[in-house]
Image 1 (cartoon, rainbow, N blue to C red):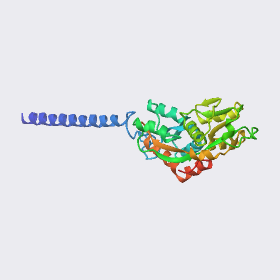
Image 2: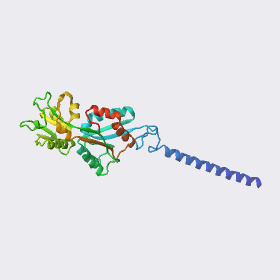
Image 3: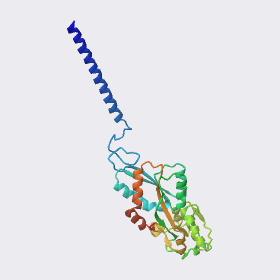
Image 4: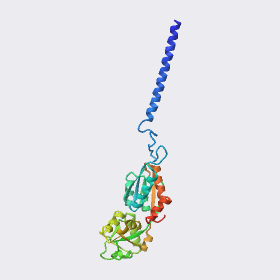
Length: 283
């Protein structure tokens, strides 16, 4: 009887230990499973957080930038430099009239960064509460007259654009380049009826490039970017209509660290060199 009781006690202890071991294995298995799911942080070194960094701390992910049309050449170049400096990142741009871009952002369009051609259009975004910080002016831009190559109409001043029979194009007044052009005309006491108002500065310039217009009031940066397709004419009234360009991180940014790094590049000495090389003025 004593031996039988002892065997029974040993059997119970063995079963209890086995049960505890099984429970521990199940718990360990559950922890392992929870760390191997598709949503698990640190699944691989390439996993990207919402901040725009992977698990190794390097920048990664896509940065979506909404930028004024006049920034197309400069920002495209800076985007390539950014991607080269930060492998694993992609910078995607949407260029257009600042007013249309601001409307898209306040309407819910997904974007990380907004670079506007005027404080007025930036204010549309900040007033709507869609900016994550205080916008900072990173460059300024001045107007210039774009004429056909060789300036066959001998345009030498803003007043010359009011001549009868001359086909002149302006940006829409709601667009920063259009508002600036109107300000310059007002400064000179001039009235001008264009053959068309265009949605952004590139569209206005393109009318001259395609020889559908004799001249357009655009930014000096756009004249420079067009090369020998147009000729530029300076005019003194442009000094009364210089536009500040602000840039900001947006509240809905998906990759904030990467977006902030792109903004830092734009404002850096390297970024300023690219921008001033394109004809922009320092802030």
